[in-house]
Image 1 (cartoon, rainbow, N blue to C red):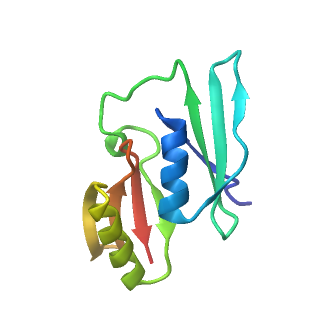
Image 2: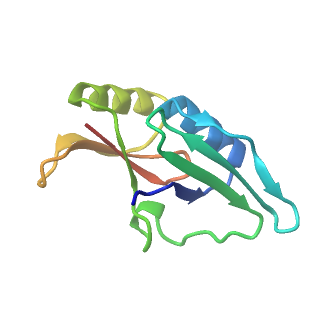
Length: 128
C-alpha cells in the first residue's frame, strides 16, 4: 500500500496552485470543476510521483484555530534531500514573505527540518 495523494482545502485555488508549483517545482494537471457542487480542484505532482490535490468549494468552512494546530491533518512533510537544501529553501521562502514556524534544526526524534506556513496557513515540514 501507499498514500495515493493528500488533499488540502484552499481559499484561493489559482494562487495556491501557482505557489505550490513554484515553491516545490511541482507539475499541475488540468483543473477539474463540478459547478453543481461549487467544487474545483487541481492535482499537483512532485518529480517522485507523489501528489497533492488542492481543492476549493464555495461552501467550505473556516477553521477557528491556526490550521497547523487544528484537529485533523497537522502538516505535510516534503523531503528535499539535504540539510543544505532545507536551510536554503527555508531562507528563500522567508525572503518571499512566507512565515517560518520553526527554523532549520535537528528535532528530538532525529529529523533535520524546518516548518513553514503556505500562504493560507497550512503547515509544511521541509526535511532532509
